[in-house]
Length: 445
Image: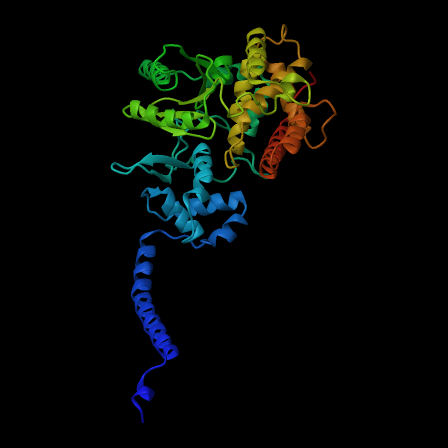
């Protein structure tokens, strides 16, 4: 047999090389897989990691539920954005998959955003079980989310954080002017002098930081109060809202986000900054939550939901017009402040378990429109207006053409996502059930 017969062919050589490569890959795989499994066990993987396609096909509410489930398994430890994405989506998860949801959960008060020393990435953890809005008189059994304070078959309705009352008390507020006035007065927030100083000091810091970072060193930044505190309709636990104006400059979203980061470094000793999609919130160590929006920006600041109740037309009106109308309304009808406080304290607490919506704004805008049925000169304390609102809400399931509650339902159905529609309509159903139970206490206006 010739020497040539013992030489491997080029084809045989290639097969041998392929086998060697395959054997090497298999050995590496056998060693690497156990390592990956050990790494995965270090992260609280959710049972619901579904991959990119499954994640995108999941509803937004279900995605948020999975994120909360993941954080609940972290045993109180902070998790980075990427860790959360890997846990709920799978190995293909990236920050972009969960970032918008995390900020939404922060806005809803279910999680908190923080940084870890030496790490520039944001970390997240579940919020404490107590309701952060009940800053003055929280009770041990109150929490951010849980069963509705009202359910058919029970006579208990939670009022504001300072009071727990029954439907009998709510009916009494509707029929007894003196009780109504005393209840409204008890709801007016009063801050200690040191808290007032902390709020004022924080506003100065916001202005100075805005001048330096957004105004290129100018001294033109202004902070003006808006919302319920400005009208005199805030209650215990209410946020205080402000609009930030920097020399008329239109602020870009990226600049707004970076401004929040810079601001957080300036107020570390007093609290922390929470950067939402459109606003910046400051959670003080003591006192209310402060919220800021830009006077000019690309965040749709001018768009005001449910402003059809203020404008009397389908499209509503812009922010400045709403603020001016409401400010004038409450100044000319002081008793309406009492009605607003009692309504918000009793009704908003009954929808705390629903996804967050501008409940205070909805009730305030309804109140503005229903005032047309009352005489603000004779209704000095707002009691007639309060009863009128209860009656309008009670008629939600059979609304008249010009009812305010019907306009709220129409706005929700026409202008928002399906999830928001369902949430608002569920709230209207609950409010209607509650108000129907006290209708027998209402006398004809």
